[in-house]
Length: 116
Image (cartoon, rainbow, N blue to C red; front, side, top):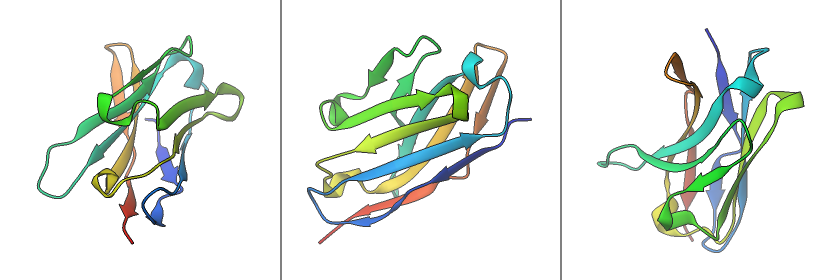
């Protein structure tokens, strides 16, 4: 069982920035595709960004050019740098780890609120 612990959420004004972190309790972190998803009130959970084991990123159209996903395999941690935040980015952000088709784990989520 892999535990994922997110941190870095909070309240920020429109146009501001936040950096989310996802720390994984595993020695196999480098084998996992890491991802960030979000769920706004009354909406389904949606993909924000993923990063493969070869460091290839993938972004939802809504965050391209504003968000950056990266990983530090030495620290077993994935990050999401969020810039130029908009009120519509308000959601609970979840970290996800996927080991191919074998297994998948989720973090508990961290709240991001963009409001003036």
